[in-house]
Amino acid sequence: MKTDDLINALAAGIGPIDPRAPARRLLAAATAGVLLAAPLLLGLLGLNRQLAQATAEPMFWVKLAFVVAVAAAAFGAALRTATPGASLRQSGIGLALPFAMLWLLAAAALAVSSPAERTALLFGDTWLACPLNIALLSAPALLLALAAMRSLAPTRLRLAGASAGLLAGGLGAIVYTLHCPELAAPFLAAWYVLGMLIPTAIGAALGGRLLRW
Amino acid sequence: MKPALDVREDRLRDLMAAAQRGDAVAYCGFLRELTPFLRGWFRRRLQSLPDDVEDLVQETLLAVHNSRHTYDPAQPVGGWVCAIARYKMVDLLRARAGREALHDPLDEEGAELMSEAEPAAAEARRDLGLLLLQLPDKQRLPIQYVKIEGLSVAEAAQRTALSESAVKVGVHRGLKALAALIRRQR
Image (cartoon, rainbow over all chains, first blue to last red; front, side, top):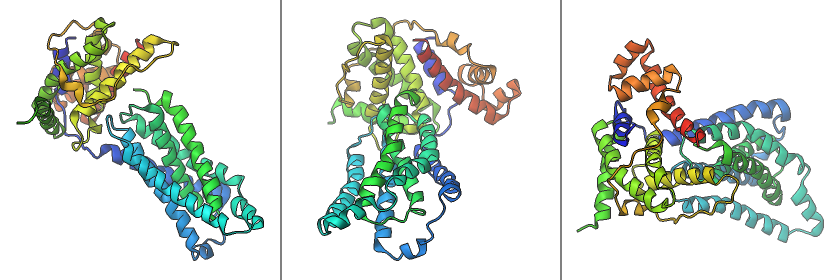
């Protein structure tokens, strides 16, 4: 087939394109990922019985703001990595910001507490389960976000897989706040971050193969 | 006066914007104007593989088409196409290099796609028409009727006894499958 014939064929019978399609597909994947994580949370982990009291604590809202900010920034980064030629500089800043603020908060909390308190602030009661639970709850969103990414056009595959993974991690962490009793900033800075990095690493590892087109 | 590069960028962007609204004539013009630049861009970079240039041009045109929903009208069209072209070229080089380490020979500038046009088409080595025959009927026939014979979706639906949406899906999936076949053949 000659190149001119190919061009004629590609152009024949095209319809209009919705430029918001990439954002919609990622958003649909994110929404479905959260909806699928909810039964996992309720079935395997259960709601935090003290959730109502916890919402009276400002730190509960700081925690929620952190995980929402990570998910939102990762959504933006995923959308950029799915678009050929899009710059990622702003996405990087948007991603760094919530982590930097949480780590500052954690450092401040550790600085003003006694050595004995520090261990409790950092490890809480659930440090081991926390990253694993977040990774588990992020699994549906990870699969769906990678599937959505496959329908787009990522040109840096590992980066695209990693941002899909971080999006899933942020969403999993959002759902996990309904179970998790921990509110200390140092705990969040260590174990929530680790939990979100697990799907990020898996996404990066899978991306290189899975996202080729 | 604007530099020639910006004029071309503006013109291609206008054509692509019209194409996104479903204007097939503008889209045809967009692909037609793009092609010599793609050819020049690949030829400069693949001096040791001149026989692959036209195949890569065709593969990139198909990739541009298959990912046109990712074009953001606020973004320079040259940078968008360039990223796709670079991705397809690296993919080819990686497949050729096999297990050898591949050093990325590429620079990062996006807009330079349109610096040097190469209008003369060499013969493509791979015949997309033959590859098309490998697709299943529910993809091949919609592509044959709508894309190559220029029938309307409704006419193609009648001939294939498929629904109109099945014809559209068949075209869409078929062109993606065609791109996958190209990759598998390397």
